[in-house]
Image (cartoon, rainbow, N blue to C red; front, side, top):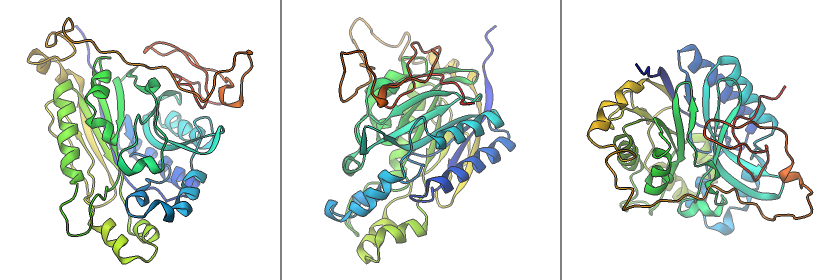
Length: 360
């Protein structure tokens, strides 16, 4: 008989220390330790947790945001940098899987930053890096578009794990790309708030949209969905407002995001947290995913693959391809072994990779 993993997942509904990467990494490592002490095997963090969500792009004109962008780019981290090494060591030490959102920088450009989700294994290996395919609305003033190289589901001891970032969880094709790889545990990471309209006007309801789309993915895929969102603290609101009462009102009035863990029927199996920082825990039993697939299995019998054809380009994009056999700094290799999702890649700024060994 097939045996199904059972474990506890943690969603850290927390704020970074804006633009202070070392302090935010310290906080992340402390939260990993706390969640592990409480029995979690999977510990998740919000979108752009290290170390700022660019909410200023939604409340200031672009000509007024250069100061913020300089701090934003300056606090971005690299996938092979010392900050990631610390997070990987924390995962290895506590023997937990970690999913964390970062602002990812690159040596190719001092101003290019991706909205990236990184999945770290319980042995400290990097299992996947996914760069958000398309920054949403005003986020395009801060983040570069990603590519399909991270649209991967990783086969682990606790299930087949995939992740999408914020608005990507509305993208039916991105979601199906993960479901079609046998995803059984999905991670949906979100921003803390999302201002869209002037004060007093009906605006985007972030909480309602999170409930709707994450519940839909859990139900459609018959899978567990770990929903983890950021939190915008008063000191960040004050800093971004810069004394402007209207901007302060926009940020205070914007709807808040929520964190929770959903079962394969789309309903919560954990507490729901919104108004304060904290960690929510949920018990995941993948055997619960089996019976619902009798009714609708959209990657199995409940589809017509003779009618629909779906192709995904997972080629990593780079600014240039050099034909002389040399490697630039951005494509220098430093190891990597193939995972069960197929393929192996060098550890670099422009190419994907799986199962990158823990640095010694």
